[in-house]
Length: 124
Image (cartoon, rainbow, N blue to C red):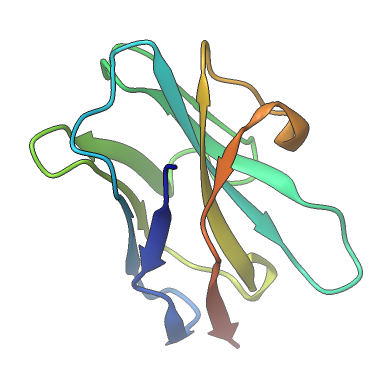
């Protein structure tokens, strides 16, 4: 059973930065897996923020975070990161990482494994 554990959330002022981490419990992930970062604000649906293939060859971002967020992975540490810069109050949400076998997807329902989430709060 794969377990994903997020960390790095917190409270930050607008314009600040945070780096989220997502560590997987398994020793290795095959290059056939894709990872995604999602977020869910109160009263809103869960939405994709960024996604990456385990090989690192393909990344994708939501329009709202392009140029501000960067997704990356460290295969040696089985960890995926989300570097967030120029944070805005609208980025306030619980952030989740997820993994699925296959290509990246923007649909939460296509991911098989989820972390517990980490809160990000951006104050104005």
